[in-house]
Image 1: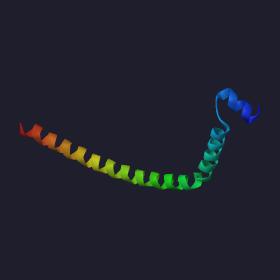
Image 2: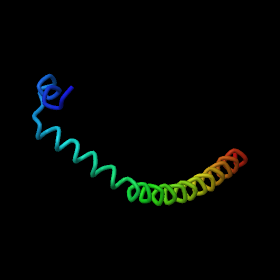
Image 3: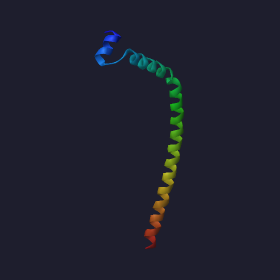
Image 4: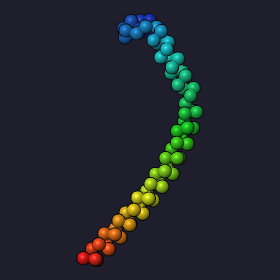
Length: 74
C-alpha cells in the first residue's frame, strides 16, 4: 500500500504523514539523552524517598512514645 493510498483511506494529508515521520525520527534521536536524564532523576527520587521514609519512621516512633506516655499518665 502506498503512502498516498493509506492517507486517503485514513483521511491524512501527505504533509501530516511527513511531519509525523520526522517527529518520530527526532524523538528517537533524543532517546539516549532523555534516558540519561531519567536515570539521574530516578536516583535523586530514590534518595529523596529514603529521606522521607526515615523521617516518617522517626515521627511514627515519636508518636508511639507520646501515646504510651499518655496512656501511662492516666
